[in-house]
Length: 48
View 1 (cartoon, rainbow, N blue to C red):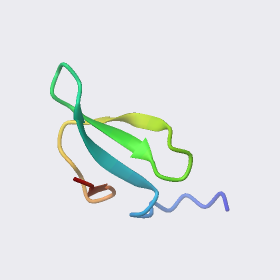
View 2: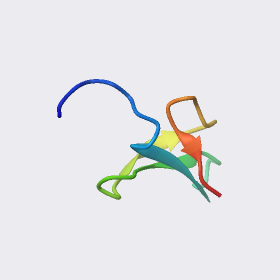
View 3: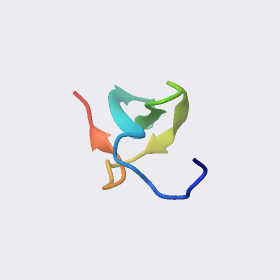
View 4: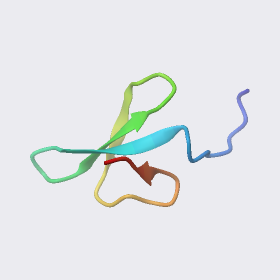
């Protein structure tokens, strides 16, 4: 369960932006905020 292998379904980028204009990254399993990204990367997919 604790394998360090990024999966596309674990994280997603929301359409919400903070004041700097970065996207919020959410953990799909826990629903917790994981951090921010300036641009969506290949380890997360965009949910509109």
